[in-house]
Length: 238
Image (cartoon, rainbow, N blue to C red; front, side, top):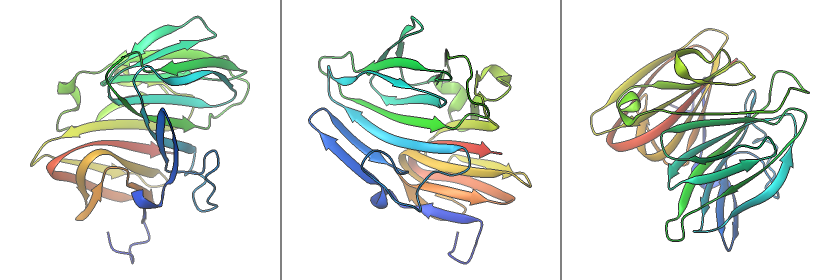
């Protein structure tokens, strides 16, 4: 993945925005809150990837959203979710969760543990239509489904047991152990984003670490491997 290869653009983890308050330590891949970078306004319909660590017993109080597809991907700990639809759930590692804000939804996200920290990725995707009916969906995927392979967890058509997202996006995740290799072909006229959630992975020979993101434009064959262990998210975008 040399700099001469125009299909790739690495978004270095050290160039992310950073917000820290007593209970929250958050890194922003794209412009968010007080962090603004005109070169980091999102990619295709992918608008936000926030890497959040939330202290025990703390969290985001009730607040509102409109016209956004919001996914919570838990890496460690658990999230207690409540919203104005009457949903009450706990999101754990392995779960795929999506909230379509649509015409308007209010929700809170808290770490219910009095002792354990919470680590999650908050992902926002711009929907293909405005004014949608708000909705919530959550499904669990076993470690075995993701170990050493790409598992589809969110898709526009909800195929293969994935949660449904109102956008032309296929979101895959994988948990890789030493020696694992996964391959993916980005089709013509498609785009991709690879996010390293945990650990260290190699993409076509380029080492990437937790927090790094790679913007991929144009048809490309991806080979993702690790010698240490990694958890990755791969977005296939229209």
